[in-house]
Length: 235
Image 1: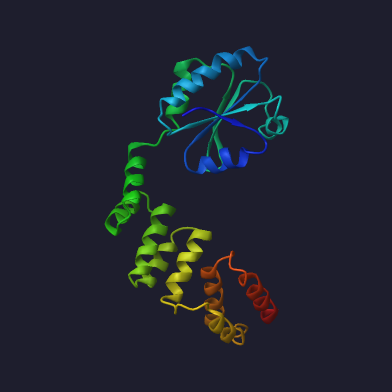
Image 2: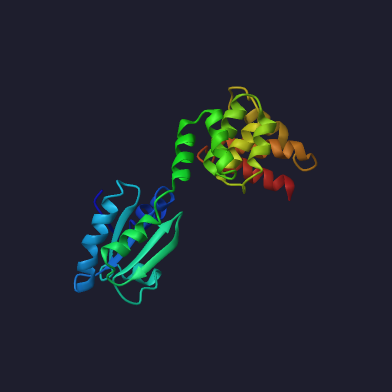
């Protein structure tokens, strides 16, 4: 996989977002930098050999001084490894190939991590439970298994499972589905309007109201209006 040229404009998508899928190695360099020209081909060779398990992103510091400042670069070449949107390792200077290989090898998933990923990819209940046997707090496995449990009518079990990990946008939707259960194939307006008169003093009604908005999602043009109505009723 060829290296990606990174700018201020595409950094968020090509580095921050991408690093949540695979490790990204950021190489900060400049045309005038001799050691950069020595290190660059080594990085490309070693990372290319991972077959896409690690991605190389190159930043020309002269063309992108903002990124240089963001990484607090004092000299180049400067190399940073990113996972899940955060820097996890790095070095400065033109390392030899053996050292670069060690640096990249540490970013590769272990055999156990590969096995868990394959189980999650399989996606059936047995596989997902096996994945959680190895990584009890794996969000991907928990969300996928939660969705299966909800679809199978085991909402209480799904909610107990979701309690293992911090709340997120993904878990809120599954939790809402678990609490609401089967809903009529309508637009929810009648139910929401009926609940509005109860939300201030009835915890269950308020939770159901919030859950329905969660299922409708932020792209539904009515969601924002219903949230405003809820706020007015509560405060």
